[in-house]
Amino acid sequence: TVDFKRPEASWYCLVAEGNAITHLPDGSYSVDDRYYVTMPDTQEKPLERQQNGHDQLLVPIVGQNGIAKLAYTIVW
Image 1 (tube, rainbow, N blue to C red):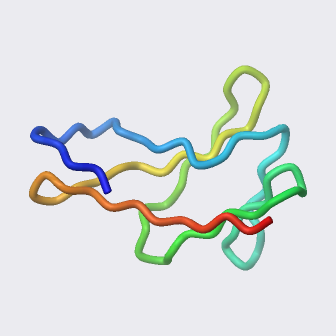
Image 2: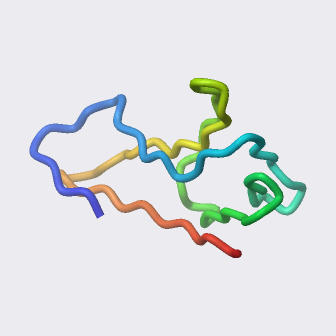
């Protein structure tokens, strides 16, 4: 949960980083074939990008009334 006084449109949470992040058919993400990240369907759609030679998975932080909630699961 993030509590803020002023909403910012460009806040993100870095959820995963690795050599290869793959979006799987079931909606989860495989990170380096070592672990998986899943998010509720109600969560904002994650962004995939490359930064400094690594894949990253970021989730936008979107709040209402000064509070934002983010949920994800890591499966090893």
